[in-house]
Amino acid sequence: MVAEREDVLPTLAEIFREHGFEGASLAVIVRRTGLGKSSLYHFFPGGKEEMAAAVLKEIEAWFEANVFLPLEKEADPHRALENMLHAVEAYFQSGRRVCLVGALALGDARDRFAAPIRAYFARWREALAEALQRAGLARAEAKDLAEEAIASLQGALVLARAWDDPGAFRRALNRLKARVPARARPMHSARR
Amino acid sequence: MVAEREDVLPTLAEIFREHGFEGASLAVIVRRTGLGKSSLYHFFPGGKEEMAAAVLKEIEAWFEANVFLPLEKEADPHRALENMLHAVEAYFQSGRRVCLVGALALGDARDRFAAPIRAYFARWREALAEALQRAGLARAEAKDLAEEAIASLQGALVLARAWDDPGAFRRALNRLKARVPARARPMHSARR
DNA sequence: GTCTATAGATCGATAGAC
DNA sequence: GTCTATCGATCTATAGAC
Image (cartoon, rainbow over all chains, first blue to last red):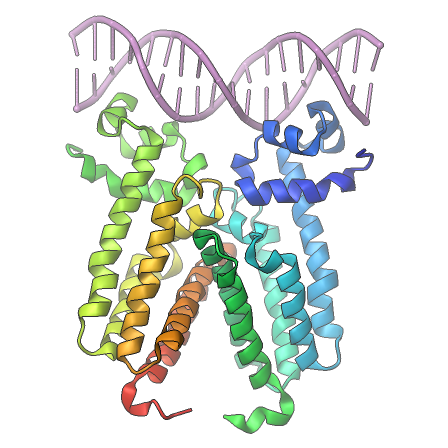
C-alpha cells in the first residue's frame, strides 16, 4: 500500500495540521498512516522531528512551485496575483484546512522549526512584493501590502477555525481579490 | 506568596501562551508557579482543563472590560477605535505576546474550548462592528471591516512570532490606525 | 493547604526475530 | 521492511500524612 517515504508525507501533514506537533502522538500516526512503528522509524530514523521536518520541506516545495515561482514568472502581475489567490484557496480548502506553518509558529514547537517557519513567510512576502512592485507599487509599499495580505490570510484561517466557518477565509480572499489587484493594475495606478 | 486562586491565573496564562495546552505540562506549571501539585489540584480540582478554562474566562473578562465595552461606551467612535488599538497594543506587548485564544484555535485543544474561543472572536467582531456602524458605515460593511481588522491582528501575531519580530504586529497596528478610523470618520465618509 | 510518594497511562524510541 | 515486545521517561492525577 505505502511503499515510499514520500507516500506518507501528505497523511503526516494532515495529522500535524489537525493535532499540532506535540499532539500528534506516534499512536495517532500509526493508526492514521496504517504503518507500524518500525516502518515509520525505518523511513524517518529521526522520529517525529524528522517527520515534521520532511513535511515542512514538502510544503515549502509545493508553495515554491505553485505559489512563489508563479508569482514571479507570470508576466502579467494582475494575473499573477489572481493565480496566487486561487492556489491558496485550493490549498487551504477554502478555509477548512489550517496552515501548518502558522500553527507551528503559534505553538510550542516554534523553536524547533524556527528556520523553515521564518523562511516560508519571508519567501512568500518577497515573491508577493515582487509581483506588486512589477504592478507599479513602490518597493516599500509593495512589501507592506504583501505583508498585510499574508497576515490577513493567516488571521482568516484562525477565525475560520475558531468559528468552524470556512466563510471567514472565503471573505478574506474576496476582500483581497477586490482590493489588491485593483490597486496593483498598472493602467489604473492613478486611481487614488 | 500565592494565597488565592486568582493570583496564579496570570502566570498560568503566560505558560499556556508559551507552551500551548498540551505543551504546558504539570511539571512546567509547578516550576513556574512555585506551587506544588497538591496546591494546584486544590485550586483547580479539574486539573489542567480547569486551569485553561479559568484563564480563558479571565481573558474574556479583561477584554470585555478593557476592549469590548469601551468600544461600545465611548461616544466618539473615532476615539473608541483608537482606544481599542492602544489597548490591544499594550495587551499583546506590541507583538511579543501571542494571543492564547488564537493559538488554541489553531492547536489541538480547539474542540475542548470551542465555545469560549468562538465567543471571544464573535464578541470582538460585534463590538468593533457596532463602533464602525456608529461611525457611519453600513451594517454589512461594518461587520466585514471588523472581521478584516481582527484577522489582520491575529495574522500579524502569527508573523511576529514566526519572524521573532514584534515589528510585524506594530506595522499591522499602524496600517489599521491609518486606515480604519479615516474611513470611519463620519464627516469624511464621502471620501471614496 | 501543602508535603512526599506513587499510581496508571501514555509518551517517543529501540531491540531482535523474521 | 515489518512484526512483537518492551524499555525508560514523562505524563496527569491521586492518596495519605501532616
